[in-house]
Amino acid sequence: MALSHPSRRTVLRGAAQAPVAWTALSYSRILGANERFNLGLIGAGERGRGVMGNFLKTGRVQVTAVCDVYAAMIDRAKNAAPEARGYSDHRKLLEQKDVDIVLNATPDHWHAATTIDALNAGKDVYVEKPLTLKIEEGPAIVKAARVNERVCQVGLQQRSGPHYIEAKQKYMDTGALGKIMLVRTWWHGNMYHLRRAPASLATKPSNLDWARFLGPVSWREWDPQQFWNWRAYLDFGGGQVTDLFTHWIDVVHMFMGNDAPTSGVAAGGVYNYKDGRTAPDTINVLLEYGGQYTVTFEATLAPGIMGYGVEFCGTQGKLFIDRSRYEFRPAGRRSQPVVVEGPKYDFTLDHVKNFLDCCVSRKRPNCDVYIGHRSAMASHLGNISYVQKRRLNFDPQREEILPF
Image (cartoon, rainbow, N blue to C red; front, side, top):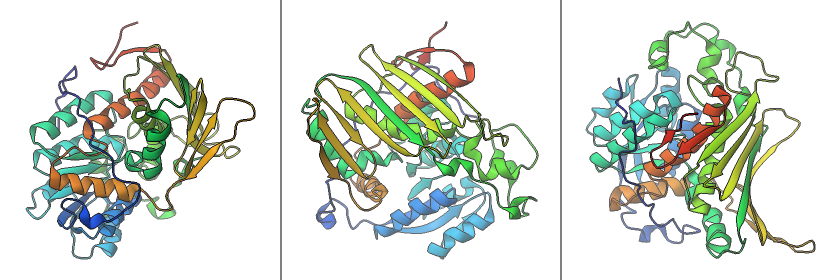
């Protein structure tokens, strides 16, 4: 399917709605909490099946259709949803009248086409991050959501994470950190990016449609590693930058109230894992926001360093946050930190609940499609700079990289 992308931003920014509460106080009190939905899953890999499980946990969803280019993945999804029908072509799934909402967990190079098709088919869509493979895909997806008046939630679940919401309210909105000049982010030792294809894929299975998997990507012969670990190849995904940094830069945008980077530069390479990957195994990204502060991201697959997090550095203190806790430390050598533990469950569930609520109320969800577009856009600057080996100056209003 050919996509037509406007060269400039053609949609207005949509404000996110108020976030969900810290805990599920009484979920039955929420508007439409008993509304039930028929879900179609497009992309039944590990992540797709995992998020589908969160939809099922709400008790408000039944899965009526599952689509994947590999029939074995459909079979695995049907273990949790035995009544679901299987499809190899997402367009056939979208024709089904008993599909109300769509979970799009395809590889990144299919996000734009499948999301736009679903929105044009009148479905509300929950799409995994990053929203796009390329900056220019974003405006067309946002336009499809707005024109069709559809709810579109991007899977940047920190927006619904209870301790993220609390930390922002306590320390960012009150100005407790003073002037923030630097935000550090990192994500080291993510072994998922080193996945090796199983021996069973050495020869292409007869029930796997390789041509459809490639979709808009140029033809190449069957390569089990590119299929199994597609995130490591820039034709299909954006490596650690769009898989991991997109989560953190979205947290930065959420906390700082600013999604407009004005420059970006990156450096890195495939320094050790020379297995054919085109995405770097080590990367450093530096973004500047309007001459006010910088945001950094560093990541390596080297197992000698592990961990992830975001740290806001201000004149009156610093705030660290990750998926398990946050910690505020006032400025001063003898200051004592305030540490708050996060929820002991996967708050993707909160994000899914927020999406379902908005499917009823028709409000915009916590990570509306426009928010997801802007966070993907910021991440893409890092990869573009890495590939082009130059600093980029960026106009965030026109969403254009400026000439040299």
